[in-house]
Structures are given as C-alpha cells and as structure tokens.
Length: 109
Length: 333
Image 1 (cartoon, helix red, strand yellow):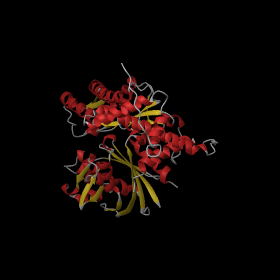
Image 2 (image 1 turned 90 degrees about the vertical axis):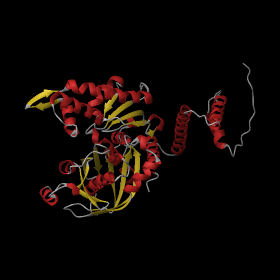
Image 3 (image 1 turned 90 degrees about the horizontal axis):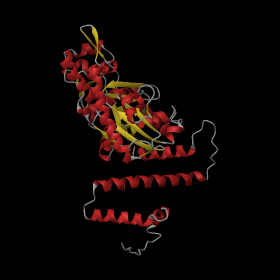
Image 4 (image 1 turned 30 degrees about the horizontal axis):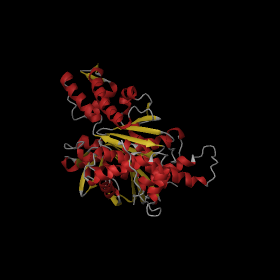
C-alpha cells in the first residue's frame, strides 16, 4: 500500500477556525481528520451522505462545541479569583450552567 | 415586577408553578356549551375551571371530565399551540399569576423530538403577549407575557436536582458529571443526556411510548377478567396499577399478575431506547428517572442501569420545579 503526500494551503486569517482546530488535534490525528472531512464533503456533494454520517457529524460538532465552550470558560475564569466561599457556587459549573441557559433562553423575546 | 411562571403542559397533566404556589390539573378540555344547567353547576361548584378561549367557553381539568360529555384527553393537547393547550395555559396562569403581576416570564419545555424552531415558534406565539383570561364566576385576569423561554422537557428534572429554591447551584456532584435523564410521561418518554450541565443533543431523544399505552392494556385485561370497563377512565386504572388491586363486588382483588407483564414490556421498550443512546451507561454518573411513570418503572430500569435513581418528592412535578428554579436563576431578584 503506497502513501501519497499532498500539500494544501491554509490562510491563517481566513481559515483561522480550521487552523485552530488542526492545532488542537493530537499528533498524528490531523491526516485522519482531513480524510474524514473530505469524505463527508464528497458524500455530501454526491448526495449520498448517509444518515449515519450525519449523526457522526452532529456528534463531532457537539463535541467540538463542548471543547470550544470549555476553552472559553477556562479563558474567562483564568483571570478571576477562584476562592470559593463555603456554600458558594463552583464558578466553573456556574459559568457552564449560565452558558447553557443563555443557549436555551437566548430566543425568549 | 416580572413574575416567573413555570409551565409544563403534558398529555396527562398540566403543571404550573410560581414562587408562591403551584397547580396541577388533568389535561382535559371540553366545550362548556355541551353542558346543561351550566350556571347551576358552576354556582354549586365555585372551583370549577372554566375559561374563554377564542370566544368559546371551555371547561378544564376534572371539571371537564365530570361535566363535558365530549371532553377527552385528545392528541390535540400535545399539538403545540392548539386551542386545548391555550385553555390549559389560561386555567393555570389565571390561577397562579397575581393581579398586580403585570409582566410574566414563562419557562416551559417541549419534548426532545419536538424541540425545533417550528414548535418553539408555535409555542412562543401562543404564550407571548397580552392576555385577558375570562373565567366563569371570577374576575378577569390580565397579564402580559414578555418572554417565553423553552428548554427540552426532561432537563427541568435535572435543574430541580442541582439548583436550590433561589436557582443557585446546590448539588455539585450531579452537576459535574455526565447524567442521563429518563422522563416517563403519559404519552411520551424523553431522554436527555447532559455532560457537566451541558445539553448533549446527540444523546437525547423522545419516543411516543408512555404510561398511557400500558394503562390501556391493563384496562383491556380488567374488562376481560373482571368486567370492569375503565377504558375511558385511565386515572382509575392508574390508581389500580399503583395499588395492584381493584375492588370487585366489595372484595379487594390482587391484579399484580395483570399489571407486571405490561410494566415489564413497557420497561423493555424504554430501556432499549436508552441503551441505543447511552449503551450500558458506564460513563454516566447517574441515570435519573422522572415523570409520572418513574416510580413504577424504577425497579425494572435498575436491572439495566444499577445506578438509576428517582427524583425526590413528586416526580410529576420535577420538571416544572426545575423550570421555575432555572427561571429564578435567570430572572429572579
């Protein structure tokens, strides 16, 4: 089985989201991620995306969103004092809950 | 001042709650004009719920089942934005919202399978805006719903467990874990997966299987074995299932042999879907059982998920308690 190397170019500004995602992957996982993404794209363009693929993609998006929210929470909380008084809320869990409620309640008006 | 009204319109029961009180009525709606001697009945029974929706009077709850021949638990109750739902909303809101509560924020839920923009819009359209509720024998109640906040139905039970009465996080153990929630309702069963308080859509779903299906089968058996025709009185069958007993010609008769196989079959269906969503649940910190059917089904579900637990108190009210606590966290003083 022969391997083939291809070089593709990403613009760090325009494709910042993709760069960040690829940077976040563990070593050795980037090629697999690109292959998976291309397969989904090909399947989509050919109109043959199976529902299983859609579910896989939705799960991946869910995971990705979770990771992103985690990162935002960590960054937001990093500069705050985290001394927890007895009986007070855990600041990380509280932030997570408020983010979820914002997500649910955002369209209330 | 803005009042938070938690509202849970289910197929079997409609529940409402504010900081000061709560209300639960059977989700039964019947046309009032079908009733003879209407004024006498209302005068004799001041607590009868009768509201005007769309220019027509409708009886709600027990009153509808007693007085309205055509009242029934129709599927319209579950049709988002239907007249029946609005009558149930009016009956609960007009009882719980105070005269001087000019602005109301409603926190409510939709089954996971209906948690989409179309149903959210229909529900919001029904609830939002200025309302004037005319009630037989009582003063009209006016209020303005300034916000409608919708969550997936069963997640209210988790909020009820992890939040205290002011909406503050109180249970860090469940809140910091991955938790599956199974809400066994009258017509549907909802599954919610939450990972450290974050809703995971891909592990959540709802199926149109609930206690009504099992009660209907028990009702058939009761008719066949004992001649009891309770097929249109599922609340009686429900009580008989809880007691595992009925009274035949004044003598109590044990009906466990009729009930248990149907409960077993229902539990099989419910657990089967949970297994598809969560596997054996080994990565879940807990499986929380809630909803009106949860107490009956708990022993069966625990054979598949040994770490399954029921919510404390009345499981029928758990979702609405959680809606209120989430609402108070967001909009409370």
